[in-house]
Every structure is written in structure tokens, then in C-alpha cells.
Length: 145
Image (cartoon, rainbow, N blue to C red; front, side):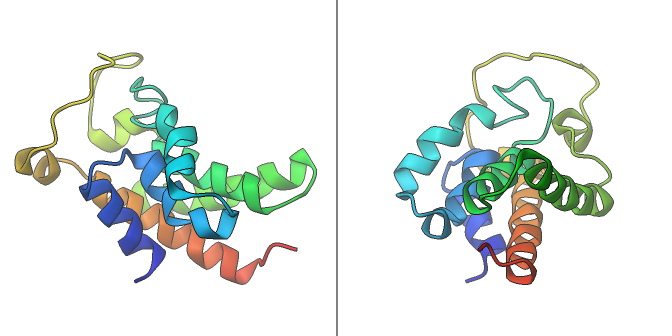
């Protein structure tokens, strides 16, 4: 199973967007999956459900930060590269834009109940799959030292 499919499956099992992407790479970053899930929970739903930067992007940033032992500028460049690929594919890296929400800023901190209707109405399973697939290709083309 590729990392995109793994991230999608994690989302469908109840992980948030950030957890789904980052946890798909837990073995590569050398951390147990439960630890990655705990460390990335707050980045879901656009950081704390504020609908800002998509949690899938935050998950990508977590993985890149863990894998590449470089100066800040180099790590930032890598994150900008993968985020740019995600933006090109999906039109934005902002959660509320990706979800088609009008309201900027914070929303209720209470996550929605995961039902079949929830999954059917959201692009999130596809977005985490896209993010993890982009990241998997990036790492293959740019192996960490």
C-alpha cells in the first residue's frame, strides 16, 4: 500500500488530516504511530480546527522536519516545495478554502461526528491521500542523508 492510500485509510479510521499524513510516515521518522498521532493532533482541521493551513500540509511539514537534518532555510524550502505541489493540485493550502467555508478564523473546537455523510461531503480523504502521495514521491526523489 502506498503512503497516499495509507493516509486515506487512517483518516477513514478517525485520525484527523495532520495525523493521517504524518502517521503514514511514522516508520520513516523512527517514531511509534501512537506518538506521531499524539504530537500532530493539534494541527488538524487547519490548526486546532481554526480552518487555517490544512492539517495535511502540517503533517507534511512534521515529516520533513523529522527527516531532514538541515538548517531552517533548507527545511523551509522543502516544505514550500511540497506545499506548492499540493496547492497546484488542489487550488489552496488553506483548510476553509479547501472545504468551501465562508467563515475565516476559529470555529467550534468540537470535531464533527464521523458518519458516512461526513465522509461523503468532505474532500479530506482525497486531500490527505494527495499530500501523502506528494510527500512519498518527494522523499524518494530527495532521500534524507
